[in-house]
Amino acid sequence: MKYGYPPQRMIPNFFISTVERMILKIPLTDFHQGFRIYSKKFFKEMNLNYMSDDFLFSFETILFAKQLNLKIAEVPVVANYKLPHTSHKLFGKNSAFSYQLKTFKLIYKFLKKGKI
Image: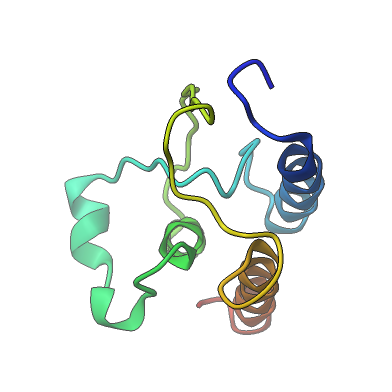
């Protein structure tokens, strides 16, 4: 909150990430922050033609790494929300709410078939 992360985003993100952490058994505190580092091997495994070209891409990579049974680790970063940045609106087309529905759909697909 010190860097301007709005509580109306922080609270749902905390709740949703907690649920996702329990379901997927991946030790991440924030599944949706978007900063990612990929190994060259992992990047070569990704089929970018079948992945999203929007905010959902970041979440898909987590599921894909889980599918390949790769190590998933977290490194703390500081994001300053007081500076210009991109972010979802809470509701409407391409909103945080619709994004979250898509992530739950991916989780369901992953759990049902073992892959995304």
